[in-house]
Length: 130
Image 1 (cartoon, helix red, strand yellow):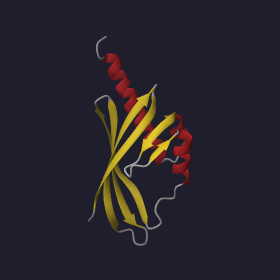
Image 2 (cartoon, helix red, strand yellow):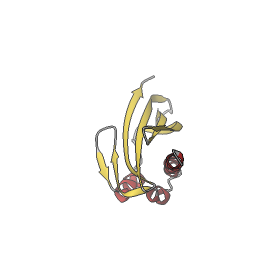
Image 3 (cartoon, one colour):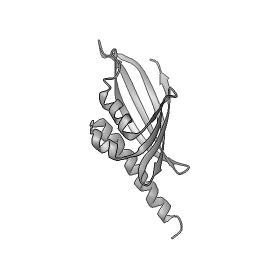
C-alpha cells in the first residue's frame, strides 16, 4: 500500500482547490460554498481573518471590486508542498477609465483540507508596477 493513499488524497485535494477556483471564476457561489468546510478560515494578505464558509461566500458575492481598477486572472496553477496545496495566481490590474495596466500581482495561497473540503486558505501577495 505504501504512499498510494497519500497520493490519492493529494490528487483529490488539488482537484478540490481547482474546482473552487473555477467556481469563483464562474461566480458559482453555491458550488464554491460546498467545497469549503463550514468553519473555513481565510487569511488575506492584509492579515484580515474571515471565519465560516457562509460569511466568506457572502463577502465575495457582494463585492464589486475596486471603483477605479478592474482585475483579471492571467494564470492560475497548483502545486503540492509539504502535504498542502499551493495556488499561484498571476493577476493583471487595469485602470477602469482607459484599460491601461496599473500593476500586476502574484498571489500565493496555501490551502489546507479537512475531510476533503478546504479548511484554511492563507494568502500572500507581491505587486509589480509597470
